[in-house]
Image (cartoon, rainbow, N blue to C red):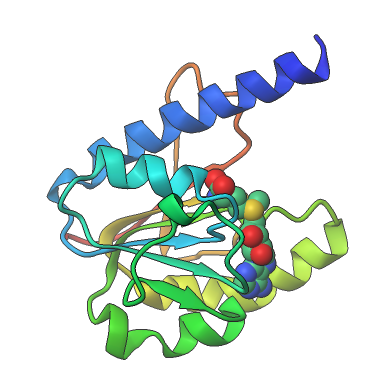
Length: 165
Ligand SMILES: C[S@@+](CC[C@H](N)C(=O)[O-])C[C@H]1O[C@@H](n2cnc3c(N)ncnc32)[C@H](O)[C@@H]1O
């Protein structure tokens, strides 16, 4: 399989997984948090498949196409280690879904992020809410949820916080 084919497979699987997770949160109130706006691709897809759902995007800088950047109230710029901790007054409610796509390829950097990010995520998600993550987070209050068929090419893990929405 060429690298182009592997990339296409990964993107198709990621799209399917986002759509599957969007269906899972139908009965979970609260906003969606997109950690890592990047090019704005997954943000743009989430807002298309979740009309009416409030979505906050986080990134240290804005590099997305202007048409894929949320309005000023919903774009939270800065280091996620700080902004996620202090976003309460803006985000207000626990999240129904946190989609994490921070894109590090370095194992040590990834372990460091998992260390500070996991507790911040745990306190931001509503009971019954979901986390879709490219990082192997340490979330003792969550269950790992099996991913649907046809999403194997996407390495993201799906977690659900225990408790009733
Ligand atoms: C792989 S890209 C996200 C791709 C995006 N989800 C998309 O579909 O286009 C990762 C993004 O996460 C951001 N990022 C990584 N670590 C961060 C951190 N600690 N704080 C803030 N932003 C971070 C980077 O600036 C980059 O824009």
